[in-house]
Amino acid sequence: MRANIKVLDCHMHLLTADTQREALAWLPPMSPPVAAAARRRLGRYEREQNVPSAQPADETVAAAAGRWLSEFDQYGVTAAVFLPLAPRPDTLRRFAARQPERLIPFTFVNPWEAGADKILEEDILQRGFRGLKLYPSIQGFHASDERAYAVYAQAEALSCPILFHFGVTLDYRSDLRYSNPLDLHPVARDFPGLALVVAHAGAGFFRETLMLAYHCANILVDTSGSGTWMRYLPRPLTRRDVVERLLDVFGPERILYGSDSRHASEGYRHWLLREHREILETLRVPEDDQRKILGGNMARLLQIPW
Image (cartoon, rainbow, N blue to C red):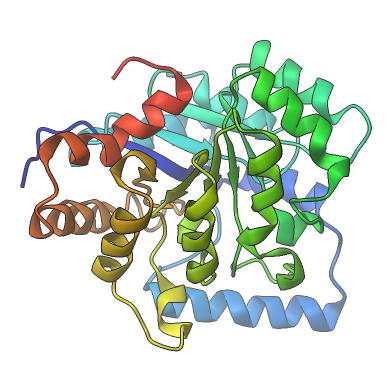
């Protein structure tokens, strides 16, 4: 394996007691029966992922930054994108400010709300954010809804990449009616200069994600997450199957490595980085293309030297 290749993890989260409070202040409350079902689902997640606890740590931004940077140094990660959980993610902003060249924050807006485009402009130009995360199944909107077009136009003007979470998700409030990546097709068509990233290879909507590559050169895909969704397909896939198909359809210039690391109790998902490296070697992917997938492509979207 070529361990000397620099890594820019395109998909991580800052989960602390503070970010959880920010998210809960924004998310709609659940009724007691639904909250109980959500707790059962969380327990199943902990068992499936072998996570000691999915409860966020009560730590300061300084402590969280120090912990993640230490793990980056241990496992050979140069930098990572951290994705938000709620609008105006101030805790994430302060966390990333500890070392902005390695801790790269994305912001979050409700794109149908009046003035969302101006909020995005402020977040990118004045508050240190480098991209935008949208979560249609939690926010309850179709990505193709033209009410979001002002935000897309602003993002295109700012050269601000947008990462979308489609497909299945752990959050019990999600609504799969808004989770189909095909909703991105008209957006990619109407904003050809806007970089759009489908997270988790569509998180179950894999065929739909592959179909997007046919028309839309400005759609990229990330490989993040444990891949639990792979077993729910009619024909279960392995991570190697997924990476091989993405290479064939999207090509190495439009694939982004991500780990979806999040929980302090789990730490950095170094085994996923190792697995990605092994798969790329086994598939005989040229070194230059490995460099693109493991960091160069995301660096290009962020317009940072790599």
